[in-house]
Amino acid sequence: MASKERPPLRVVISDPKAKGESVKVKVKGVDDISYSDTMRKTKEQDRSELPIAKVNSKLADTLKLQEVGVMTLRFRIEGKKIKIPFQVKIDNSVPEGEVWVSSSLLAEAIGSTEAEAEAFRAMSWQISVDESIAVRLAGLEVGDYIDGSLLGLKGLRLKIVGGSDATGIPMHPGVPGTGRWEILLSGPPGFHPKRRGERARKSVRGRMIPDPRVERRKTALAQLNLVIAYE
Image 1 (spheres, helix red, strand yellow):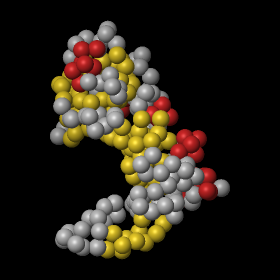
Image 2: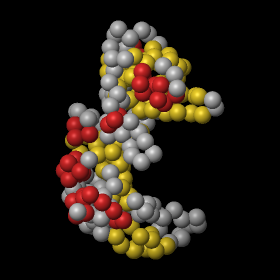
Image 3: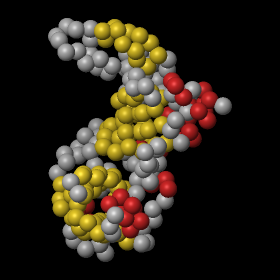
């Protein structure tokens, strides 16, 4: 019963090699690129897999996309910035300076099937994972490593650097287990002092990822933060 009450686990992945250098591209919607519900982000839930973008090898080389294969497109529509992360596929039938994505996605996101955008290697992105994956993460701790293939990043290692529950209480690397504790803190995570030497008693979670099958909604781990480990 507890697992049914548990919110989806949001996983935020950061790429420390991504510098945000962008290239202007023409984005075209095409009908033969799939766009499923699992790729759709809503107010209630994050996507569980990234949508696909096709680029030619020259653009992939320029943005250094081969290493990770995740790119962000940033659109400017009526004064608003819309950023969408994509899983990259190399296709040299795509003309130079263009990016092809699902026409359904593009129409849904910006109301058009063609647009100008800025493309750059994604600095961070997030997905939600179902219980079958969350269970496999249970027992790992802040500082441990995950095989990237578990999250669609074959050949990469991901380091657990933190997380938080639905109320924003963070995991703390100095606290064992999965429970909540009140401890005296002099810095992050959990406390950002405004004055030198300032300390405060704050609530934190243990450094271990809990088993989602035994968590309840109010105390469930809601977000897990990972960073790509290149060393």
